[in-house]
Length: 80
Image (cartoon, rainbow, N blue to C red; front, side):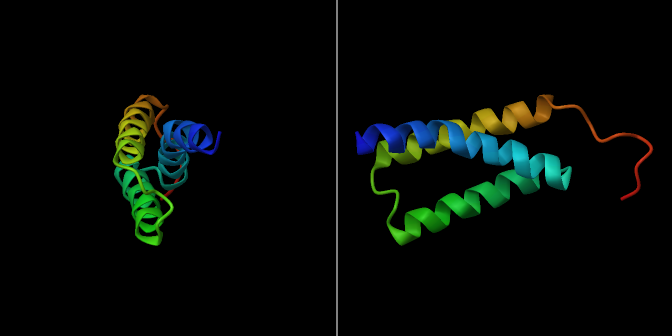
């Protein structure tokens, strides 16, 4: 059961984080880099210990990056 939760989390959470960070920073590359940094830190600490789990993370990152590109752009009248 623990592995099922890890794989479902790896399938959903990185993609959501990319979209969240992309929306907050208005830059999808920065959102991707921030999420990759979080995943790299979890791998370094030993929370992600299986290669298939890393592959699922990478798939979710790719899907989140693609969905972030499909989101509406920043409103035209706002200042940076």
